[in-house]
Length: 104
Image (cartoon, rainbow, N blue to C red; front, side, top):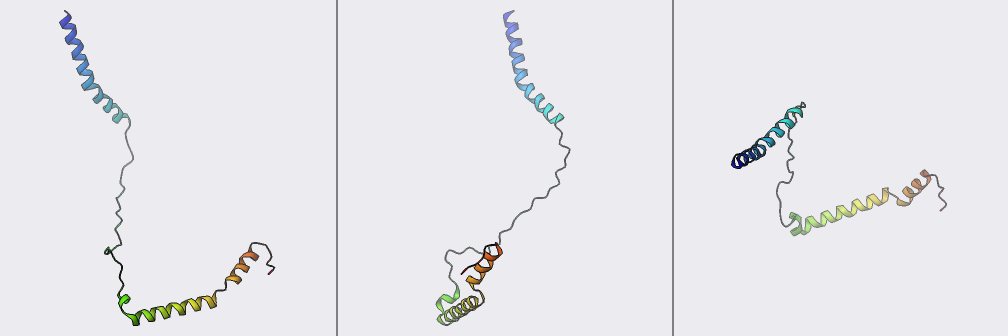
């Protein structure tokens, strides 16, 4: 008789461990229906890098004439910017715009 009860206990234990998780999974999926359709498209971002180089070496580093021309153009651009943009005038405009008077 004890063997019979032991077999019943073992059988119920095995059934509970094998069937119960499946039943709980079924209940969770059955009652938690997802009615929203997933129509989103996956977008991929392509890299804009054409080639990765270890050393950045522009072609004008070895050409002294071209380097002189570039330096001259940079100096002209800096002088032109300094003529058209007066930092003191810009500061004065900002101070007057904020409501405080410029006394200098």
